[in-house]
Length: 505
Image (cartoon, rainbow, N blue to C red; front, side, top):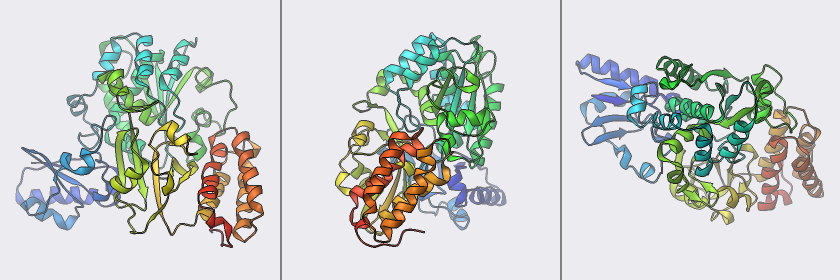
């Protein structure tokens, strides 16, 4: 009997390790031949620990399972959820990047290959670097870390750069509130990220890669380090990739916990052992990046999606989505919702459908007041904008941004003046200090919002001017995007700023 118990951090946080141990112990006591496989999560976080038992018809799910449920589970008396693949949450998705997450043993290369892994890499090996870049460009894949910049164009710049050494750097410093897709893929399907980095290396003629992984993800660090060793031992990494005669190797580097190191130039400084502060541009990292050499800096999900493009083809991937937003997006649903988790779907799903149908509305049962999309620097969207399709240009047209596709839901008890203050305070705490608009502007922003909270509504005009200065004058997105949550709260929820309120502590 094969029983799957997730090793994902979210599942472990609610007792998955204890459940796995209890299953093995109970099976031994009963003399049962049971194999417990630690898989990634399916993304249905509200059901964790989600235990699956392999049957002739498919894998049957049980959730949430605790230690006390184990005897009934092995007796066949615990009520099941049915076939996991047939659950509404799973059936509604288009799983491309996350097709293996929750399905395979994350550290089994044989399992990875049996489920389509390495097909994209083998296809890439048979192509020229320019051919790989063209395929990725034609797919319409854009950066999934926040900016949405076309991946193929960035790669083409690095390919055309002349240098004795080039690098691939994976930005795994996933610091936005309400985001966890990077962590999930690294814990649940690490070889797809490794494969994507190798393909990127082949595409731009880089031979060395680094994953810059945040220190707050100990499980992801452990799994990625083990996966790299396994990949190197299997000839997937090294001087002779899968016998191709071409070289690429990589290392895992751990950051020290600075939010601003999610910005690519600050990340590169940190990776070089320097203080994590933003660099002025130009030069672009694609021309002078890590150690002054041409460097591809891509987010985890961007690189983990490349094997899909190379396996299925650019046309297949580009067939999903809306307008210039091609393919799928792993949307992370969090906050005050009934069903929190990861939901991968093609671009274009209306925000309202995502909140009301997929997420099931608020857990509190109160009306939804606001949805913040794109992390702590994302705009607050009111229900009047819930018909906005989930896509880059469409969100931009409504004063919002998709960012890393973290979605945090608030009910009608939320004080939006307090949330605006939090945005400014967050920026003040996390600023690297390199530029004045961000370093000083965020501090003045907190003070100004406190004045408004005490009834001085004349300070609203000052807040608007301050946000404009930060937006136009900041070196990077931290100071430049902080006005998004502040101004969206002010514009969409003016009543919360119009009367005397105590500012949030």
